[in-house]
Image 1 (tube, rainbow over the protein chains, first blue to last red):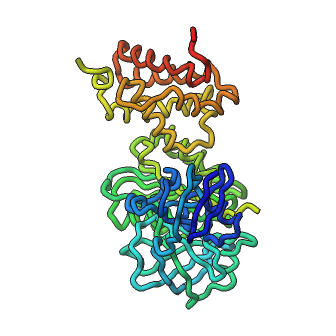
Image 2 (cartoon, rainbow over the protein chains, first blue to last red):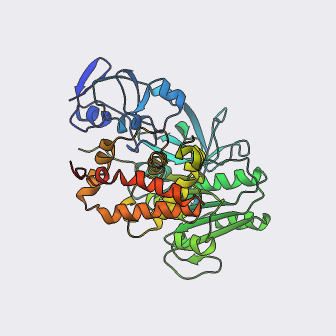
Length: 326
Length: 126
């Protein structure tokens, strides 16, 4: 079996075991969050040996050349020597400036840091909570437009991050951020193209950034924003989005819920069915899909079948933070 | 003399064809469940490699890779009817793209040579 050497210590890996899982099994402290190759928290740098391509597939070319790889998706075929590389991800100290409730279950945190990092609308950052837990959150703010970083955090029962955002966070709280990361971003350069933005839950956060980036960019083509939730309480920013819709002829906002009383302007239908009804053909559309993985994956396929090109479908599935296996 | 791949239009033709072909495959209830839970982008890259090979273009196709890639599906019952349905979708896609029937026949003949590998069988007569 191959072995991983980290900081001059050698650890044997089991068959099919990732570097991350192996190190943890041997009691090595390793930062991690999504364990699926998305959040980049568990990144290491190869000093010698070969890393499999899937452990670098979401990295930038420059990072690959430095030998960086994601230990959660690295199952090496031969011995590997690696080093820690905490500073490979840009780390930023930020201060919470505003905290308010967008719904019963969504808290908005606005943060300041000087200078604001370079990012693109739709990207995400890793938030390091005071107890060391790391979670990825999408940016809802628009670079060059908003003078703050905005995150919209869904409060999950018992979630560490949620508990902090609900109880402890307040104006003045310090937070460490890492990133920005992610490639589901607003692409300019085609002001006439129709856009479909569709998300469930706080999948609205990156879409809210992408939408306002498109409007600020003078986008001319039709923009359709679909936001889905189980119940009416899960829809948020409804008034803000209706105001944007009223101010922009090319924008249509389509909220939908699965359960609950019918209400003016809010569909009671599954979001994929609602999209299929209102936009039967997605030919030439740029498509952005964010939120629950089940929705994102299903909608990727449906958007493609409805005529969108694969290269025009941008997806950001919100994976839950994963716990190491005991 | 130009090769079939060149006649069909090279890489640009493959790119156009992959979209049309993969869309037909995912819309076909006889076979689309085989693609449930599959990363679409990775799958499209594989479809592109497969089509380049089927068009007689530059490829690193090996029968062994095709065997390995499909072995777990064969265990779950992948059979000739599914292979035929994929070939039918390919043929239909090329017709839509106005590829001459003569060239479609050539492509399908190349595809046919992968059947035993895909379905994990020894080639006939071996």
